[in-house]
Image 1 (cartoon, helix red, strand yellow):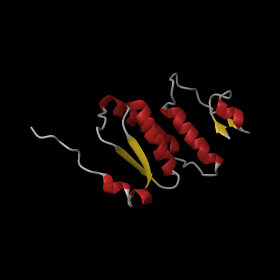
Image 2 (tube, one colour):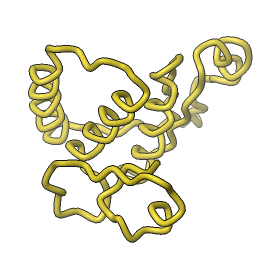
Image 3 (cartoon, one colour):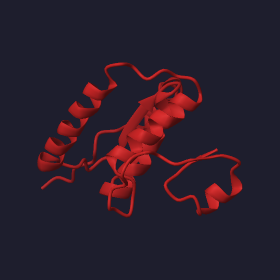
Image 4 (tube, helix red, strand yellow):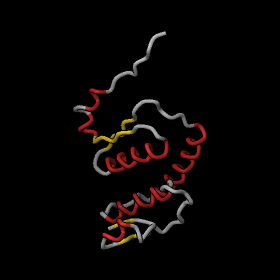
Length: 131
């Protein structure tokens, strides 16, 4: 099953079922916030997860937050670690890829239970070279 705007893509050609998101696509070369959220919701519904009734309110608030964020954003210099379990791990993974694509920063997704066993031990304060 493919959830895509492009029914002629290689992905769509190898899938038995194609779901076309029912939203207007942003005029950008990559996925925008609206299409990302739509695809996530579609995936959740395909596997039988019910979307909360307050989702529309949350979505509108998220759009406002993202607009405010873009106006005042300071990108991190260090690696960003995104943690998630169950449904949230694929979202953390996707977010890490998007952060690299859109902002050019290093972001790494980990499952929470794995992160606490090993990667957390590699986090160090940045080295500052004295004057």
